[in-house]
Amino acid sequence: MRKNLSKGLSILTLVLAFLACDKENNLNVADRSPSFLQKKFFVSKSEALALVETLQRNRRTTETNGKEVNDIATFTDRAGTAIFYVINFKDNKGHLLLSADKRMKPVLAFSDTGIFDLETDNPGVQLWKDFIAEHAAGIRGKTEANIDIINEWRQFEVGQGPGFKTADQPVWTPEASCEYFVTHPIPANVTIAHLTHNVAQWGQGKGYNAHCPNGIVVPNCTKSGAFPCSKALVGCGPLAIGEVLKYHHRAVTIEGTNYTAAMFNGMPPKQSDDCAPLDNTVNGNLAHLLRDIGKATGAIYNTVIPALGIPMSGSGCQTWMEPGKTDDFFAARGFTSYDLDFFNPANQATIKSQLLAQRPVIVYGANCSVCLANMHVWVIDGIQDLHAIFQDQNGYCYEYTSCYYQMNWGWDGGPQNNTWFTYDNIVGDGILYNSSNMKAYIVIPN
Image (cartoon, rainbow, N blue to C red; front, side, top):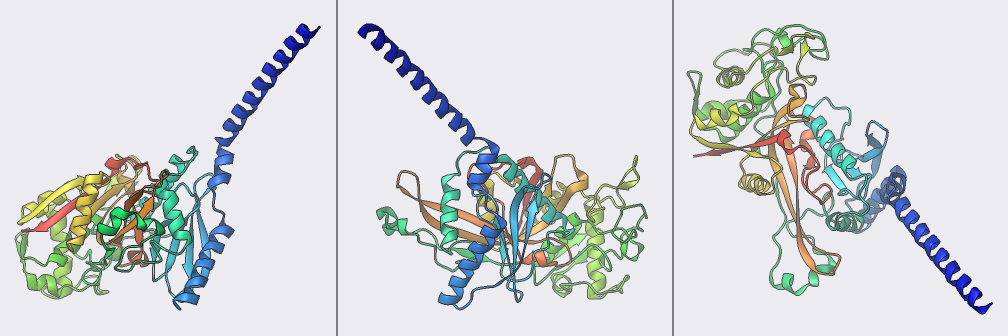
């Protein structure tokens, strides 16, 4: 009897152990389900608003320069899942784009002035939203956030980091007591703002396109259904090249015309409201410059998809220029110019160094390698190079670097020109985006 009882207890023990293991396995599976992970990392709209309001209220108490929230909007994916929140502040005190997922860095973009319009037709901003959305989709199955992202959220939740402290000194967290960093201070934060903003807030339409070919009227070509002044648009490529030429104001010859430094310096930050600016005036020189760049780079105007009879671009960049012509154009005129894969870490260091040396960088972006309809060329003309000391899972301190870029979108100096956008370390585990879809063009006067 005792032997049978002992045998029965052994069997019961094995069964209970099996059930316990099975229960544990079921819990592990549940912990990895999309719904569980979303709940674990999701930041709701009310939580985002409460967090930002608390931080700004604390700033008003301690620094007398806190901001009050005016409104909050949500950017979602096609399934309706929140990706980030746009928080606009009262009294033209800027905006903050806060991630809705704690597996992504908290501050995706920010500005101290103006509002952020989610519905803008600016193709560069639309491409950036696609870029962020792809990262949001890519981390949905991750069971843990990267340590860099965890630390960025900790920093943000105490009112430090991008959008808060961007002074000349680094943000020192408590972990800065690590002995190495006492004797080896990290670099100071550096801000280079809007190199081209005061010299060229240009656009592609009225006055700028005075010498472009006549525009072909086709459905969906522009919002109004017609081209400005019945002329084809300048094109984002020639415009970006022109803005960088204006910034460096070096004498160059384009299509037989010698553009002197004095001519560049005289060109206005914004074009006049005339369809046909007079020749040999500062406005006329600007219109001729943009058309000559178009000729020199082989720009194709009135680009349409023949089978459909509609423009290749849905956002106003209906003049197509092969991006690779950028290097050739500048190299033929005494500049050092070359292109880089935008997202390569070593290339990011080069882009940063160019901006810190106060040289704007031209960028080409598209949301797929064959999507001429969804491409844009613009100028990065500002950088915030930020440094902090964080602590990893094992308690070791390490230096962390991130940056935010400011753009001249070539979109008539729109409000998003003042926004600082992030493009690096969105999730802490590399770029979840087709890196071949973005190129940087370095331009250095010799």
